[in-house]
Image (tube, rainbow, N blue to C red; front, side, top):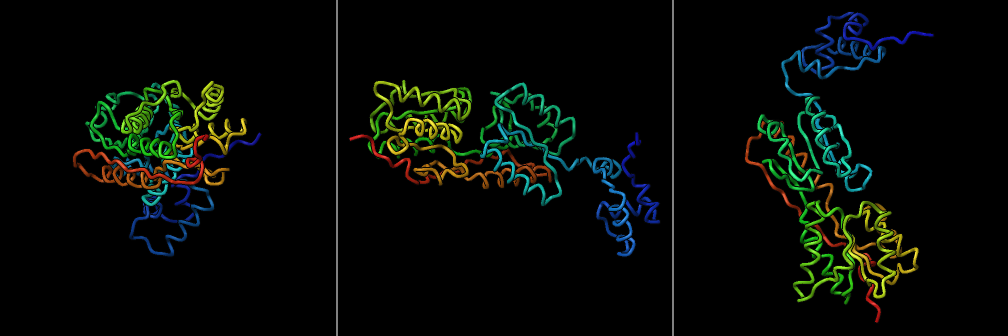
Amino acid sequence: MTERAGRATMRDVAALAGVSIKTVSRVVNAEAGVADPVRERVQDAVTRLDYRHHLGASNLRRGSSRSGLIGALLQDVSNSFSAALLRSLEDAARSRGTAILSASLDEEPDREVSLVNDLVSRRVDGLVIMPSTLRQDYLSSEVRVGLPVVFVDREPQGVAADSVSVENFEGAQMGAEHLLAQGHRRIACLTDLPQISTAQRRYAGFVQAFAERGQRPDERLAISGLRGAAAAEEAVIQLLDLDRPPTAVFAGRNDLAQGTVRALRRRGLSESVAVVGFDDFPLADLLTPALTVIRQDVGRIGRITAEILFARIDGDASPPQRVVIEPTLVVRGSGEIPPPA
């Protein structure tokens, strides 16, 4: 059996390039003061030896407290919203030579606390969190000593920190009003776990749209606690089996809208039951009919989140910011199906 060779060290690079370790350090840390021919020799040695620079060790030698890492804890990185948000954060981090350690929380509070502790122990420079916990008091000591934390999609509770979110109440109200304007009255509302603040706000906005018309939605058509497209699909099938089924559906998440579309297709009702979804997703415009949605500008959310986080990392000590972004109604066809005559 061949013994595995160890990873090349800075000393190995220096020996191959015929320079001092200090010169290698200057080259790999992109510092000035090295002649171009010497820099090229070092870079060639780095390539030949497959050398990987240890940023953490370098920071320790220079007395820097930066790790060049940030943590991003989102609900589900396989979901299009979380994936697009992560990509936006990555683009901003890459321009600063910063790497992102990301993970999915899956609405599990214990998982959130454990992952935060793990990232803090790795000395990340900052955190972006889409929290699962009801309160984030457990972060108070870290925030107090200066760890930059930005909450995204959901506002923090129990800790003073920055947040970037969408106006969920008004967005859901806009979606319900759109269906009411088409003449629908029996509108189903599908939402996530009831303890999640975004689900609460979206359902409240849905109810408010009826209230402003002097009406109340049928509570039997409001289904909460739905975790994913499969659960939404089965919930809609059950609703369609009622003596008086809904003529329209407001789906409070992109995956719930996907499940709704599948259920209607199973029953041959895609052209008969109206649907408005909260949040867009890839190929939603290619469905038949194309899906009408309340769109969140995920790219903008990510850019603002990154701007705030890196400003904090760079020393911004201003009071915490609360940024709320307005969603928009994108009319495509599914939300404009009228109720039966």
